[in-house]
Amino acid sequence: MSALFSPCTDNFILIGDRQCSTEVSTSGLYLTDLGEAITTDLLANLAGSGSANAVEYGRKIVRRAALNFQDLVRRAMANMSYQVQQGTFQRPACEYQTTTNLPAAARRGFVVRRVRPLAKFGAFYIDKVVIKSKTTATVTLEIADELGVILYSKQINLIGDIATPVQILSEFTSDILFITLDNTALETYKTNCANAKLSCTPCGAGSSKSAYSISGWDGLQDTTNSFGLVLFGGVQCSFSTVICSLMPYFSEAILKLCHVEILKDLLNSPRVNPATIYADQSMLSADIEKTKNSANKSINDQMAATLSNLQKSAPHCITCDTLRRPYMVSIV
Image (cartoon, rainbow, N blue to C red; front, side):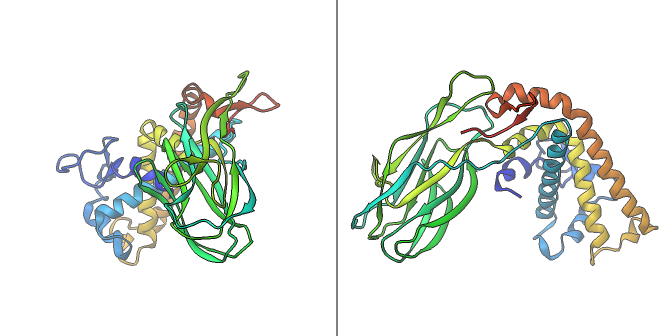
């Protein structure tokens, strides 16, 4: 499950019941709404060694249901000639040039700034960062926001004179991103980094509009040198954010998907005897399929109207193919 799901799933459907719970679910729904058989005691027993307690297990159930919801939304959109893409777009902002022996300094690399608002589904997508050093060394690549919060960190082993690609494959919604290497006296390649603009063109628009600016960062200010780093990325529609925005409209269907996940665990649990709920265990498998199909039908029935609203709220993610069928797409 993508980390981007956590903020919109953790309190979306809670484990307690509406009479006794001290927390209020954002959807107004609780796992105990699924029926008398789904009790907190049952959920605690199903949690087993994989979760600390029933509450944590309940959160995992909702996250699993949200992931299934995402897959069902993708299929529904595809069936209606819509396509959602998380495509990568490679646009290097810099090229390697001569080498220079740089003294130890603050973290250096790139700064990416949003220069105009995007629709709420917009995000900066980083495909990869390529690092090239004159010397062999171990460095730490970090991506942080404007407050210094580290959003990504990875230790990289570099081999002298060889460009090392580091796949990021993640989207970021911060207004400012610092993509840097740690304080080191590497004899690094210099990269000449023009102040690139990443643009986003709505379908049918006559001209593109700059969304982000990219430049090198010397630890204190913008520079044309990104110190051995080359960045590949672009502007795209954040499908995780789209899913989070759709969830409140499909809360009943997601509750059914939670029920499917609980029943699947019940079917395979070594800690709970399904016969305590289902005298005929074959009925449990049938109930799983029936509940899954019911959730899928609810999503498909409502999807056409939802797609129409989605086009209006995310025009920068919409374009048209040669057959004039609209689809969600990330555009650089």
